[in-house]
Length: 168
Image (cartoon, rainbow, N blue to C red; front, side):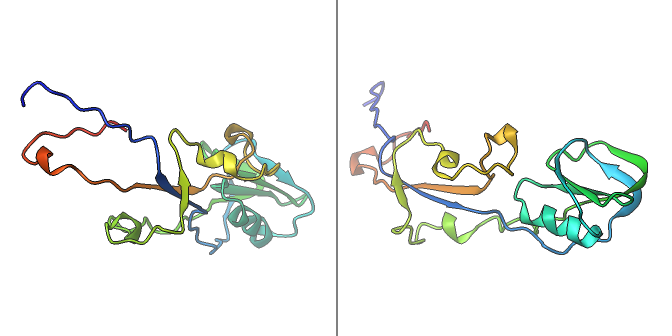
């Protein structure tokens, strides 16, 4: 029937999975005389660039690092712009893993999400984590992670041939 609109509430019974993003842990030697970004988290008594880069690789919010070579002070940063020349510093961007497949297994209708958490929308995936004082204050001191949401539903047979709009 034209002009009739059905509204179905999709707020209930979503499946949710939270996990850490995949990162490369292959640290580079960095660029002497360069720094990336400003501010960040300071780590004292870091002996070398490999140790500084490793601190960045362990932090899911870190995108670049800087070692102040004369005082062995390492800065891990989430803001990595601008790139500036600076003496007695070594810095590098932390390489991320290659982008995920355009069709990850979680996107397939046959994927088994039975063990995922059952939640209702709206939902904030970050608030279910523990506060982390080493995480960025811009993220409320929660680690930034990757979240998946899935919804299972069936369309009534009488809707066949109709236009169906999902507002999520």
